[in-house]
View 1 (cartoon, chains in turn brown, cyan):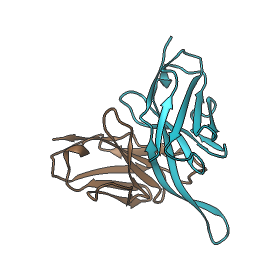
View 2 (cartoon, rainbow over the protein chains, first blue to last red):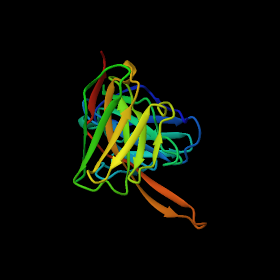
View 3 (cartoon, chains in turn blue, yellow):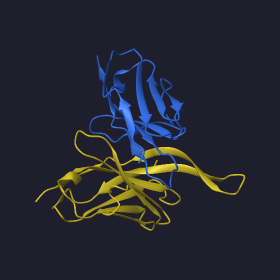
Length: 110
Length: 130
């Protein structure tokens, strides 16, 4: 199983500032990585796939980068609605193999 | 637009089988992969498994011995059964659509471009308790 590790567990940032979230894979997943946003009481929402491609309707302030084992989600100028929990997900060798999620990073208002 | 709705008992007794159904509306269930994901209260996401509309499945190795998924294309539904449940199976259960497109490479081997779990149900809470 590929283990995904996200850091930090909690990130405190002020509105308008930049947030950088990290995700590390226990082995290379190439660019087979997605990011999801989850707000309290809601289902996750797809933000990024292919490590860097924004899903439909996702604002340009969200960007993803990385490949292999190291990935980053950057939110360029935080809006109030961006404070949530973010999960990375690897899908290497999809659909033959399982997918795994990171444990999440909670982005909170500073 | 496509919407997903989970349904099933909210309370299951220990050692019994959890059964959930996801109904797809606003679009066809055909030619997609469909996943189940769960989330214990205050914790992260755990992928349970996926099913294609042909009936082929992939399960999380940690749950494989207890999981069965099925699909009913005539009803635009797919289902999850998790046997021998314990309190550790208490969670919010989500169904989601896996979106991908297939291709054949220069050698004729099939491959997929995966676009993520782009549609999710609202989730249903299942509690395992006597």
